[in-house]
Amino acid sequence: MATSRNTIRLFRNKYIIALTAFAVLMLFIDHNDIFQQLERRRQLNDLLASKAFYEKKIEQTKKNLADLQNNAAALEKYAREKYYLKRDNEDLFVIPAIENSQKNTKMNNN
Image (cartoon, rainbow, N blue to C red):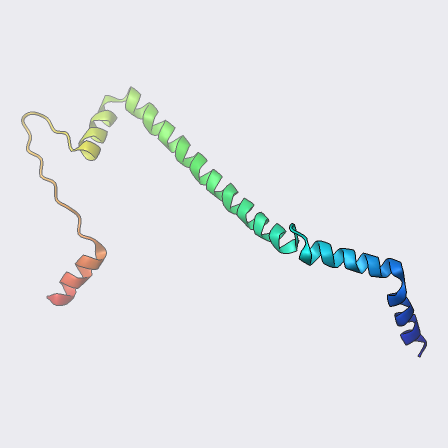
């Protein structure tokens, strides 16, 4: 009986009521509630992962550029593979790659 009176007295306390109302407001109702904070933290982690990926790609591109500027054999290889360039006395045959889905249907039909 004494514990129920203490509980009722606790909920009648204006400071406890104000603190509870403030906590509910800040955690669930406010524009920057706990769910928004969790979503923003997830977005931040995604952006940081994306940043790391693109920094790695930039370093790789810089390395390739330096190699192309300093190495004639690498420049020739790049031009042949990327732009299908050839020498005057050569013939070039381009064979398109078959996609996996087309390859599987051709194998299943035979």
